Image (cartoon, chains in turn brown, yellow, cyan, orange):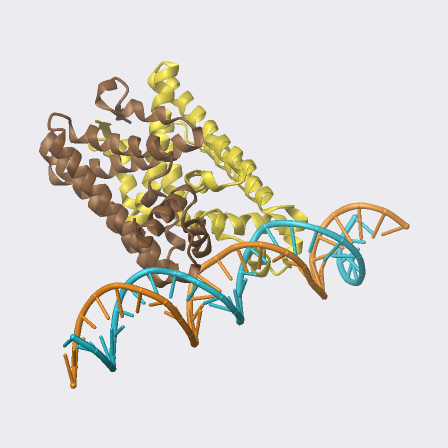
Length: 184
Length: 184
DNA sequence: TAAAATCTACCTATCAATCGGTAGTTTTCT
DNA sequence: AGAAAACTACCGATTGATAGGTAGATTTTA
């Protein structure tokens, strides 16, 4: 793996653990074994690094979503989507990168903010299509559902972390659907 | 308002905008018109300040929840709860303090982490009681619902901020219940 | 084909600013 | 007088960022 990828991977872990302020050029450089100026060689400013990080995270997330969709043909895309979040949490025990950055977005550089917005817009659109196709919803209703599900999952990641219990996700998948209908 | 309250109020705004790293002793002191050492007089360490901040936030939040509950007798407590979140967002255009800190919790001092956990446990308990009383649920089902609703609202705050649109909350209240049943 | 120019991938060294925190002193209030 | 609430004056560490340099690979030009 080249240095640039190493930097992005390491930065992702740090951001997902504690947000935008939880990484520094020196820290990244030290742990990789280069100098902080070399990190600046790949990323002119911290904002650039953050923006590229979010952009790549979004692309990888959506790509693996489509991959899973293609390979698991008999599973509901909604369950697939829920399990993507649950899996990310259980695998890394970390927040969603864009969820955390989204919560902090008031304090982020503009370029990072835009990438966070992109993540949410693309995810809402992906889910909206699923609700239209799987549940025969109208465009409007599907969008509302998409936003609600995405919010629910981002929030669940927070709760799972705080309560130190990833089983809170289990009530969401269709297998245990007795508890899953959240009609308020 | 005394200095200590001023410090806490100012710190709350800064944390709700950008997280735990978004305030410093110097910044708080400058904006209030005292010296940073005077902030240390009231709060020995940054962890102490953060912990007291979260503790007070939790107490105020739950107290005004009970206040509203007592004054608005004919409204569902669930709608009341939802509107507390929506109101906080529209009034301050800021995240839930403990939602943001919860997302960052891996990087927080232990004392702050404990206060964040307290916020979520008390809120889950409050909602659980509502679901038991209003919807005649079992203890277990009510807890699942409480966790789901809290997660949904914390996540909605993130989405509302990122999309810059607080109307995403509107689909949740009982008045527009056509779109509100989130049965997956 | 060989020299010249350019690029890649780092480096050393340093900057002003900011960070959380401390010791000891002075002012203000009761 | 004595306690509370501020202050001055620091400390060591870290931050993002910049200037300038270098060895080696690659590309362009004559």
